[in-house]
Length: 106
Length: 106
Image 1 (cartoon, rainbow over the protein chains, first blue to last red):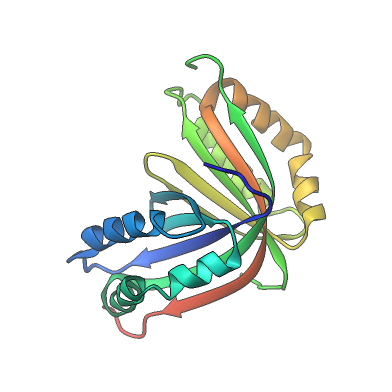
Image 2 (image 1 turned 90 degrees about the horizontal axis):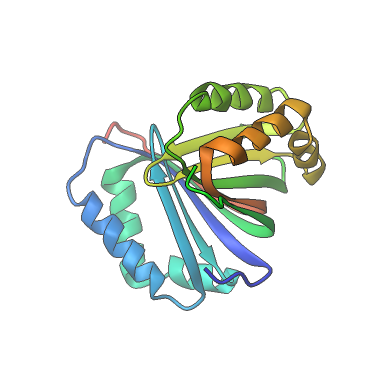
């Protein structure tokens, strides 16, 4: 992942409903489509009791463009109608970062 | 969770080693201890192929204080020695947020 400075993170924290129909396919489709957008830098996701998905972007303009992408608007609508009990979306500016990489296999 | 504006998010993205010994106990201990610190606002965590844990704070000063807490420094040291293959830590300023709450049970 490139690291321009500053860059932006969209933190999407979610509680799913019991309704799985179409969810995984749409999540994969949106992940693939986001990666093709101008200004996209990277994506991280994990799910436990809640889901946390974070996408990283070069600018607030890139985030707005992706938010308003026609296919993404349709996915957001379906998400509210079927897949999410609640969600919280936070737009953040990444101010500092630190990396650790292990030298041996642990 | 209170929502002062602005506030800060610490995104901790991790890849674990195979070494589980003591990890869960320490993770729980640090989660409980973080919640007692001045300026702590909330915590979210999920694990899939990677782990994502996010803590929320009132200020950068609160984040620095927690980073330098003696018990936390010891946990960080053990994390690098035993539990993490790699990690990335990002300090972010939350600029905007949106909530969705379902009205029915879905």
